[in-house]
Image 1: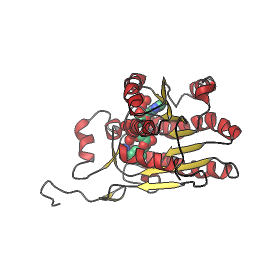
Image 2: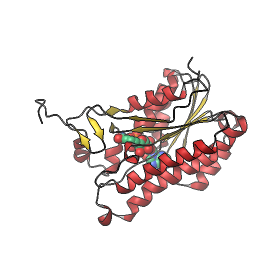
Image 3: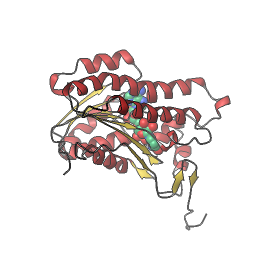
Image 4: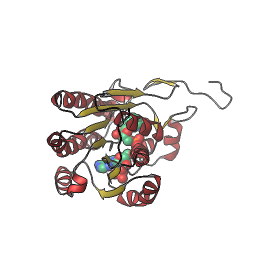
Length: 263
Ligand SMILES: NC(=O)c1ccc[n+]([C@@H]2O[C@H](COP(=O)([O-])OP(=O)(O)OC[C@H]3O[C@@H](n4cnc5c(N)ncnc54)[C@H](OP(=O)(O)O)[C@@H]3O)[C@@H](O)[C@H]2O)c1
């Protein structure tokens, strides 16, 4: 029987767009209490009425840059009792920057990806998991990527951050073995979100080209998978889910169709 998430506190980082926003909407349907953060808190606030309408028991949104260790520790430590008892943590905040060859790339791109995708995930995890261990209850769901399994041209550091996520997730699972906590990595292929827009710093034409001739995964496809993992019975731990568009075999083997259905 699936696990009920009614009134469960679900904390989603990077909930202002894409997978994070869709995941908030999917957990809302389960009647969860949603704790949402991102830097664009105005977007989070604007989502609140729809989330309540969709069934969320309550929503609390706040501004958080996961790269800021003091801010992460301080904000999570000062959550009220009602919000601080987090049942499900979705470490989703993340980004890629550029597709330039490593030896020609801007070092600041690397720092932003490592600080967000690796260090940000670690800061949030370090702040949330001790409470879960103490309460003997909790599920950590991290957003990985097929980029963490196999590198692609120009992907170097982004792929490295997602490979780090994969092994950090495995390591955390080992450290929590013997507790009732569960640890999951969701590793998607191509998902159409703001991701490419962020990668190409607002170059819409370039971002749109990424999805040309392919039916990509949607943010909702990932959100449904996350909620499926979170609603398995307590004795079932989904360790890793790798999902891609049917047209995608790996990060760079992708069958694109022209409008006429021919290559
Ligand atoms: N799209 C894909 O093809 C794909 C494939 C595999 C894995 N993923 C992973 O899925 C996750 C979500 O990406 P997405 O595709 O949904 O992209 P997206 O639409 O660009 O969403 C990224 C989210 O992360 C937040 N974020 C970024 N930096 C942050 C920071 N420093 N502090 C707090 N929040 C931050 C953004 O919010 P603010 O800008 O408001 O802070 C936004 O809500 C990422 O970890 C990504 O690596 C994506």
